[in-house]
Length: 252
Image (cartoon, rainbow, N blue to C red; front, top):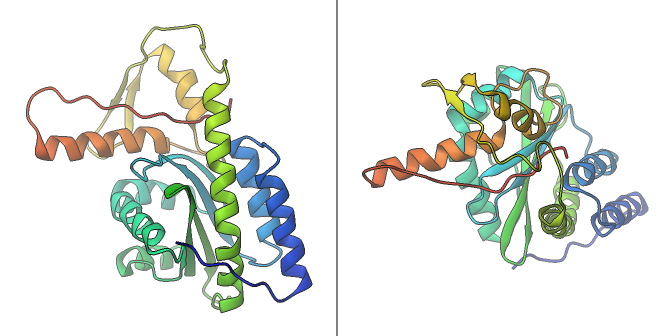
C-alpha cells in the first residue's frame, strides 16, 4: 500500500496540482506523459527522462515517451537490460515505495558511459497494477537526487498511475488508427539481436504508429520488444508452436 506524501513547499504543491489536473483531465497516454514530464521538471530537473506505458498484467513496456536519452542507449537497454529492469520495476511497485535511486550496478555502469551518473526510477500504479514506469537521469556533475525530490515523485506516482490506467481504458474503446479496417496481417522478421531485418507493407504503418516518442532512429518499438521477450520466456518453458499477444497503444 502506498503512503501519503506531505509536500512542504508552495512550488511543490502547485506542481502536484498541475499534474493531478492532467491525470484527471482524460488525456491520451502520450499527451499525459508529456505533461507530467513538463510539470515535474520544475521540481525534479534532469538531463534525460523516459516515461513508459506498461502492460498491467506483465509489467512489460508497450510504449515509450523519451526526452534526452540517447538513441543508442535505448537500443542497448532493450537488447541487454530490458527484462531485468522490468522485474526491478515490478519489485518496486510491489514494495509500496514506488520510487528509488537504487539501479542495478550493471545498468548504472552503462549509463555512466553516456555521461548519466545519477538516476531515479518510479513505478506508476493504480488498483494494484503497474501502468507505467518513470526513469530520470542526471549528468555526472549534477547534484544527487534529494529526499525532497524523491518525495515529490512518490506523491505524483499514484495520480499518474490512475491517469495512465484511465487513458488505456479510453484508448482501447476508441475506433480508428492506421489501417483500422484492414485485417491483413503485417509480418516482421527480427535478427538475433532483436533488430528488425524485414517488414511487410501492412506492418510498416503499424510500427510507425507504435514507435517511441523522442527517438530519432527507433529500430524496434517497446511493444515488439515486449512480445519477443514473452516469446523467449515461453520458449524456455514450453515445446511446440508458441504464440503470444499484447495490447499496445500507439500515437493514434
